[in-house]
Image 1 (cartoon, rainbow, N blue to C red):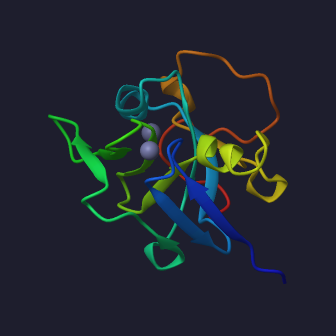
Image 2: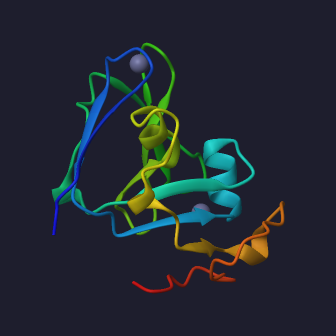
Length: 141
Ligand SMILES: [Zn+2]
Ligand SMILES: [Zn+2]
């Protein structure tokens, strides 16, 4: 099986991330925490195990932590792009937007999301055929 290597970057190029192989899961998360942390109606992201990603040093990013829970996202100090997050279950979470940026605007086909997480908490209905986890249960992992 071919192994993919993704070279990701913020807009200004100061922050680089390398991801190798396959993520643990690619999904949409509708939970209130992700919506608050990322400032969006849902999070579209991939979740990786630490041994598959090379993350930027702490000198390159602002480490933003939510005041009331241990959920963080890391932002390029120079251009402000959110490059990844770290929250439950503790693994690096890389938004689809980072992969789109590196791939001419398209999400690489093999990273297509496979489920909706916390669908009961949604603020926006989504019309697709993906499995829905009403709570935090991961489907197919
Ligand atoms: Zn930047
Ligand atoms: Zn979430």
